[in-house]
Image (tube, rainbow, N blue to C red; front, side, top):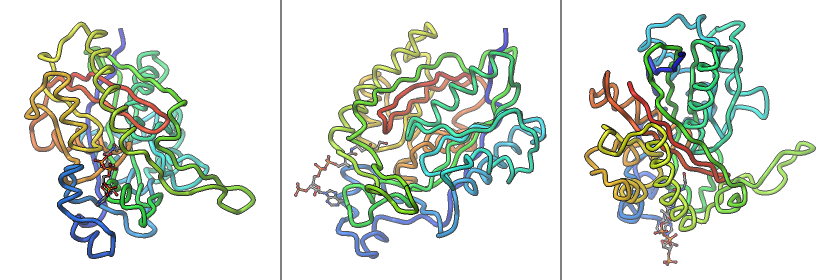
Length: 321
Ligand code: UT7
């Protein structure tokens, strides 16, 4: 039986950290105290002007390719999870393929599931690999959310950051990806959206992120608890079998509530939201790579990844490393 397994991770954050104090200095009507108390965020990275999603994706991918020690030419599937692509088309995955100099990869495409994007992308890659159609995938979450923020809306602009994370997933006889579940309910689209488009050379509607924060908060805590139990049940495991929980990094209070519901102490939750803010589809692979590189996650670790985001979309993946 063919399984899929992560064999290398990488990540990239652009520029220097931008602290809450830096945002206040830029004239945003907020305070370090409010942001820290309500979200746990202390700083985030913001891509310099002109730096695109595919550029961040390339840097993270090169790190993952080095860590996995694979020949880029052997990658036959490239999936980029993003809601902030370089262009309307071609996909950021195709642009990434060109940046990496990979010719004739089996397939390259983007997945648009907002903050659940990486969990969606990993689940899709697993299904491609387990079907036998593809053997080695590059799966990336990359975002420049700073480009879709209304810097006059203090309720949203302080929450997000830019960055990218990547993994190499390949066919293996040993199980790696143990269970996964992805879900969506489009009826919730108004509570988190960028309700604009381009037509006739003009932006139609609103090109900025809009959010009902409290509605998102409640929905996120509910579905993150449910989907975690769903994948654990699918794998026939319990929370005691999980070494590390890596939830989408939106707000420390969401992470704490999710851990509480699952009966996991915060000492078993990887958190980066304090340093990265919410980097949407990039947040989970960024946190995974950080914990791999600092030695918390290693061979044999069992990890539960969980995402939730606009759509609404949500999902979880249970991984053995
Ligand atoms: O990937 C999923 C993405 N989204 C999320 O995960 C967001 C989930 N939601 C949240 O994290 C929280 O709802 C927020 C952090 C967005 C907001 O926290 P809250 O505790 O729900 O605050 P609130 O929206 O109820 O606002 C409370 C007060 C308001 O003032 P008044 O009306 O009580 O006087 C806001 O105007 O806080 C004010 N406020 C701020 N004050 C200082 C809102 N944003 C700010 C700010 N700085 N940046």
